[in-house]
Length: 185
Image 1 (cartoon, rainbow, N blue to C red):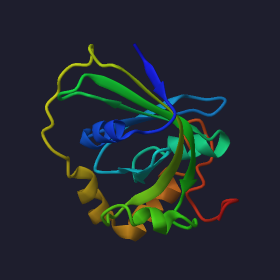
Image 2: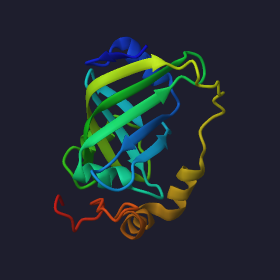
Image 3: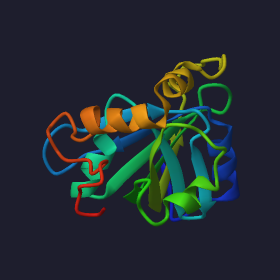
Image 4: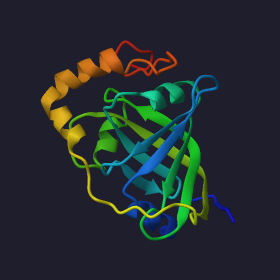
């Protein structure tokens, strides 16, 4: 049976912090719904109703484009290894690009890394837990180093060029505001 909560408790926090990955769901009023798997030590619980997560450079930039049009987000964790639970955080979020106030403060919660494209600052309005009885067991084998090597090979200038050429719009053509010539620059 699903249970809803108006804040992240210590027990919820403990479950989230033991997960090696989470999923982010976002959608604008039109276009495609996006669900992305995330990992690489990229999420922090800042308070009982606040989560920030670091979005590293990747092939798509759907979440930024969706939030620019409709600032709702869902995060989901699944207990793959031990505890059979599914947890979802529902709320609103704002995108913080490297040029935005708040980006530098968000960076202080994470170890330095090349390729941080955005941070998402989420206000959690509701947390829901449900059984994860049908979620299979998976063993964690470790982090992949492919993205870190890709970022190192590109360097900061190459990454910014990639943002400009590959991350300016969503697959539905919505602007992501990753480059400086945007309204919030």
